[in-house]
Image 1 (tube, rainbow, N blue to C red):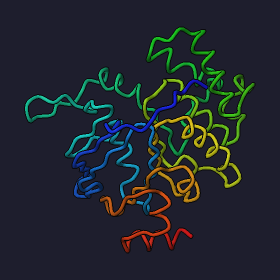
Image 2: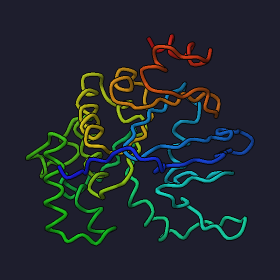
Image 3: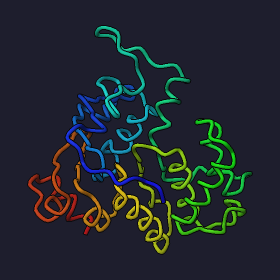
Image 4: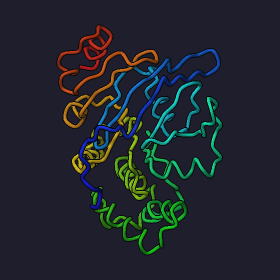
Length: 262
């Protein structure tokens, strides 16, 4: 596995500044400000409808912000800035930005007509111009990392949900991203399959991958996260070191949420 060890640095790899998002008259995000350092694992917690997934999707411009700015590795995401005005990037420029941001969804989004090896190797071939032999070698290496060595010729329908999600993680890693985003990656899985996906995420965290994870898995957040951000009703209610926030939340909304989760 060739993910480099990364030491947390002072300069953030992700910085969100006054991020708002509305769907018509519904305000989903109401001014999110946060920074994530290189090598940091941050878990976003909060009730359904609090804006966690919407914010995650704004980071790679799958959702357009209504107001605000998001920077990844000091580059403004989704827009060119001229003076005080923002102009949305072309799809080509946006695709180039997204190469550095891996995303894993609740549903696996694998191509059903392609075998596992092709699902993993195609993105770097098509989007980075990686030679096919090199991409296939990398795909096999990643399958070994996610404990699916030898399953490259299988098709998605032949795999369990947990196995499909591990393939989805390998596919995202094949692009050698600087940042990984996980949107409730275990919520669609049967309970007995959750652990195998979380184990892969633990490996990534140990290897120094920067990760932002929307999750309801409190034990995973306690064990792996450096920091937890609790969101409710479109705002950051509270944030802090993972164990400190889970054991001694300061805000009543956080306390009430954690009581419901136990």
